[in-house]
Image (cartoon, rainbow, N blue to C red):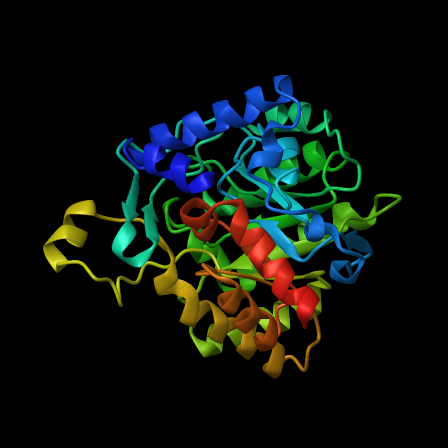
Length: 343
């Protein structure tokens, strides 16, 4: 069923296809059983798939990465497709339009995307209001938080703290996003001193709560091993719950397109198959160098069950889909879960 829908969606510009998809997801609430045409099977919630991490129970280890449901518009419907958890965002304190269009590009030869969306979202208050309407309490929801474009790095902690406080009651875990390449100077916050200060400020607020929430850090695939060593130290020092590896890359290696075609697209983060090898390398490095000191959620280039198994064998405790889900639909979720059951 998704194969037919994908052919139609891929006739549209990527961002228009995205909005149409979300419109279709939302109207399924008025057509009982419609989502069953896309959800491949009930094995997605087989008892053997359950995972317990940082005090949460995930019905299966396959989640939806941030970036698809930025505003928490369709998390209920996406959860019904078989995901074990859904991460919304990145959200910022104030609403912002993001970068100028066009800003999302398909690379079908590589099953990849390039985006420079720029944290376009309705703002954290609007997202929190929607998240209060969670229909399935067993669906784990993550809140991916960032800073507004016009907020300086020196004031960034204020933005992250605002998002944390606003989402605290409506998400199960948090993800600090300092690794998007599409907000000017954001990646500078990955440096050791500013990142440590930012995470400590969030942990102070978190630990003042009656029930602190897990806080994870999402990192770029473009970090050097020295920088990854710093990440390991920071995670231990700030007592984070874990790391999400990785975000999109600014690299353009391994693409089956002429350089002129890629240069014409311009700046943005590359996701999909070309990212697979590097994201797996980062996962393995973090796990080995830290002596498995913290959980890692693996994301980047998972376009098949084999890709997912590779991430898990490298050390990923959970995985997330984004670009692979766009190219392959809900079947990818069930393919991965079926392989994990057989293991």
